[in-house]
Picture 1 (cartoon, one colour):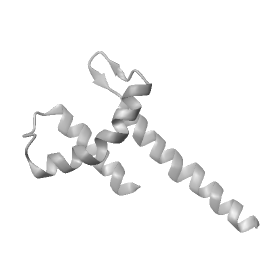
Picture 2: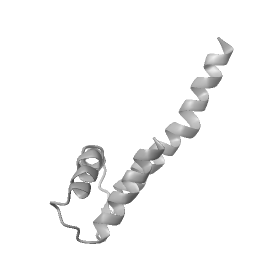
Picture 3: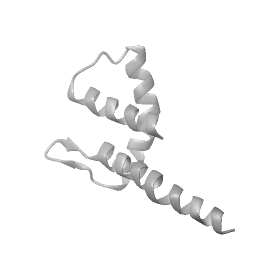
Picture 4: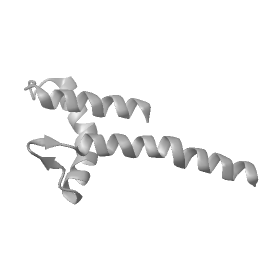
Length: 80
């Protein structure tokens, strides 16, 4: 999950500049992040004034999964 967070951050930084779309690294980052970001963009209007908030929403979702859900599942497992 932490690696995916860094990939999302890299994709957000790449969106600020105009990278070569044929660069292999850029293509891999887009292939990994676009399916998730597309789902967020499709369901929630995340562009306000030209700013795309979908990477932030994905990062908050990952943090939620790491902090709340995983810890809750560990506690549930200990109780059993």
